[in-house]
Length: 409
Image 1 (cartoon, rainbow, N blue to C red):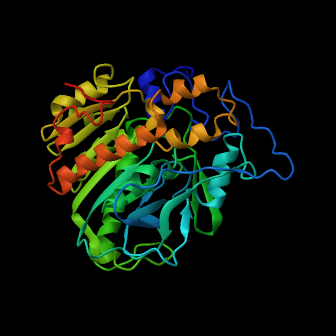
Image 2 (image 1 turned 180 degrees about the vertical axis):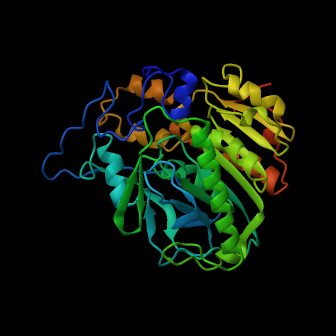
């Protein structure tokens, strides 16, 4: 266990309850956690290990683009001076055609290299995966207006960590916006190759961090409104995909997040009533938000070692959920299972110096493919029900098809 942290505090930082995960560092150090060692250099002529992601399961092809946003109404709380708050976000959406539009990498080259080096690896050893998203592919208009989902990731994590879920939801007909919380995230690449890293003091995360994230989300929703009106809020006037302004439905907005990003969902919903439904993927709550009533639908989705029976912040929130509420648990999983870690780390475990027992300790006994599939299915069922008014029997109780899911009553 990481020094000085309870299991719940570690859940908020993206670490497992037993030790810090080498794929999810809590700081911006370029050293590996205790118990792991740098990967050996590749022999001359040996190619890098190519990582992959699971293909989306929905019926639509996926388009994507990233956007640089500047909030001139706020200063960045994590850097000195009076710098305006800057964000990078990635859109995922159903595309009408992907021909002639290149697939986009999981992370841009500069931030991707930083991500690998901070884990004792290099781009010469590991090639990060390609996503299913095609750059600036036209948005399909045959579906009419599309509901929007926002994603917030774990503390010091990157927006890329939600890719397997985001692009799957896009393939099912959602517009998904993954948000990087600058200087909280370990690395964020801005246009021109500028890299901004984590500048938060160690152990400084709190309800203040959640308030910053909630303000980030509110700002992104405002920019979404600009797009819906035919404008382009990109700070560099970067191109938008055709069809986007016609398909954005600002009257149907949901939010989901992992770890601290899951906690941010409640805070963001308290701040912004335009968010109609929220889902927390295994994140502990902080501050006063769990003590406030919330009348909109909310999902608690926990790992196999965590639920409201052993998390006082979840117990505190539960009676304050006055709208539709559901609390489900994915058995065999661990905290890190709710991120792309679940799929990627087993592919490089030996390079990270992790034994099969260590992988199982941090990522659980559930098969990665199965873990991702179940998360996708239940998230889609929840948001389909709440934003599309398509009731799913999966949310009524245990299902034979998914015995790994139990309902916490």
